[in-house]
Length: 340
Ligand code: TXA
Ligand code: MG
Picture (cartoon, rainbow, N blue to C red):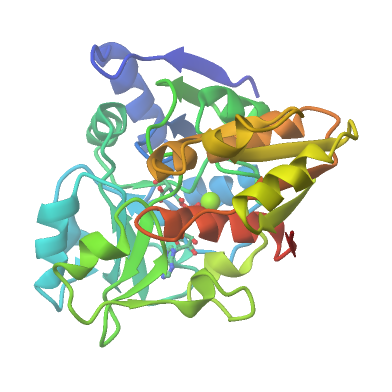
């Protein structure tokens, strides 16, 4: 199969292209598209055969549920049984945006979406191309991140193309994604709402509306068993071995400066990079973790294209989006770390 790339500017969307890609989706095609978080691999979310193709294209285990993307809050009640008004409060406050709500499913949601669970994850992405595409398709769109299972989520159309060329019909190139990490997954079906995956809709933001908000302990402690099916897999892993480096700033600088071997790569903040004599891929400022999050996956992919076999990466604080950043870094490292 030939994979075609369509370049679309989010501010000047070509209706003809979007409408024809919407039709392709509705009729069983796979279309990768940008969202504000990462690129998604879309299929008709109400059609089992189309959804099966997502699992095949990604090489994704079938016990990992998919989330449905909608363009209108009204679709919520078609897909879910809402037992708690909080769902609407959160949707109105944070949608469109990087928040996936896990709710009780209705029968219209195919079993293959939920991997047999009685809940379904729903979100409304904050990207005009994504919203117009969902509208054009006229059905909810199932979309996991558009990477091959196990590799870092794509933040550029080229990442998608490299992973999925020949496996899907179309990729919409809408430029780099803003957030760079996948959405926050919040389960509203428990007594106390619980964050299953941290993202740009942060604990601090959600806590303002949910006083009894909980966080799955497995998010930052790799010894815990995650409550979300997808979180148990080794994720976001580079081909090179990633090792997290803890310590005082000056000790980290000394340690990095000793790494002169060609097959070692360094990922670090602007503050650390500027003190180094060795090559360093800059993630962004320690005082701007949004910037670090935005760059993380693309920088990991960049190092993976080189001869680097070991990547050392500085650690960051877990405030705000820092929790999501450290969650992805810990998973990518598989728990490998050193103290210097
Ligand atoms: O930002 C995002 O969420 C991106 C963009 C494309 O929207 N999508 C994404 O999808 O990251 P995916 O499939 O790569 O991750 C969805 C996560 C998985 O960890 C999955 O296990 C979890 O959400 N999930 C989905 N449905 C669930 C459910 N009913 N209960 C618990 N976890 C669920
Ligand atoms: Mg994913």
